[in-house]
Amino acid sequence: MAKMSFRFTTEVEVELRGNSYEEIYLMLKDMMRGNRPISNQANLKVCPPEASGMFFSMEGEKELHEIPMFKGDFRRDILEH
Image (tube, rainbow, N blue to C red; front, side, top):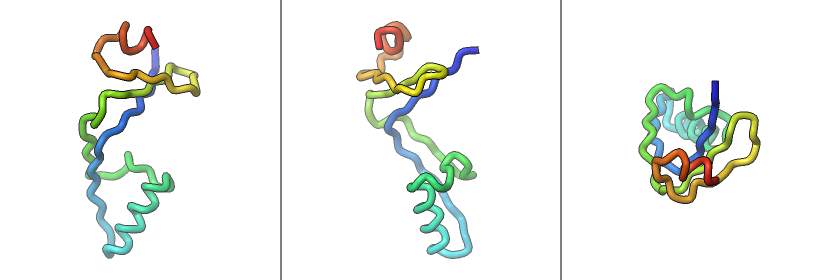
């Protein structure tokens, strides 16, 4: 089974709930610093990419390769990069 990872700039909307606004703010702060996973939030919307640039890595690779202009064509987007 093949595996690839993609990274791109996008907009995320998340609704947080807590006992106070300060608690919610601290939850957001933890997410922004990577101390709380954003993907575990119940009410999460991920919007389409804001820019056409995208990065990818193949299974087992630690290096990200850039797709400068996403075209939707495997040969042009992946194999050429």
